[in-house]
Image (cartoon, rainbow, N blue to C red; front, side):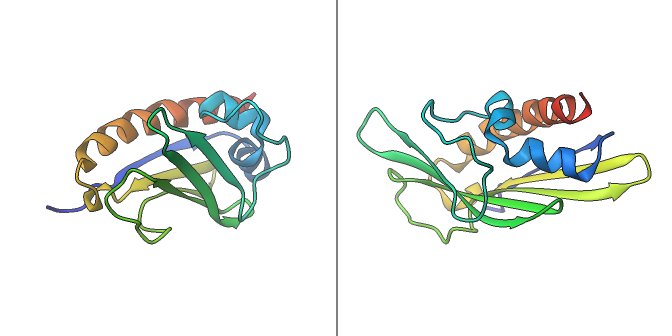
Length: 143
């Protein structure tokens, strides 16, 4: 099987600092992604973790592993029920910002889900997530 990596992008008519703020500030992240109710309000940075308890006793955990201000944010994904424990960068959400004449291009890369037995399911869910979240990120940054 080949790789299962979601790739998407959008042009956002806003400053790099505003787009970055929407990516790392919990008050904005809550509007385009899920966060636990008790998640702290400080901006996410390298080492920031979000942990969700699963009904079967396991956990899903995301960890910021790279945060280049106004440039690149990488968040690893790990689910305790997976058959493998991949390298943190192997299955991740990566948001890259590139300056354009008319604003910022936000590129989103999610995966590689080919490492997982049911990787196609994660891939399909992530395609939908990327399409929905990029629109909401754009809307929040342009407000």
